[in-house]
Length: 133
Image (cartoon, rainbow, N blue to C red):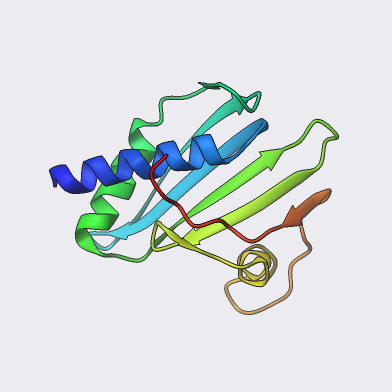
């Protein structure tokens, strides 16, 4: 578990440092012990430094357990830019980058396959490969 905790901390730091300038909101989810678990955190970055608005520990803990259990899970990062536009990126199984069509589909297709409207003023983008900073 120590390796998973270290890896989850590395992934959170990679997300935070790789997100760039703006206000960011991160949601992590995983299917654990027959239940869906989720946690989030947010931070603001000027592109040089960053400051958390909530403790990132719960999100990192879910990533750590998901890595250990090798379970279904994901990460979504929403970045709000200064012009009130937003960008959504996503990772499957806590670290596999999703391409823009998969991110769009995750947000714009309902559980029964019905189309849902995209979020206003939001673009859906390819996620980057997460690596330790």
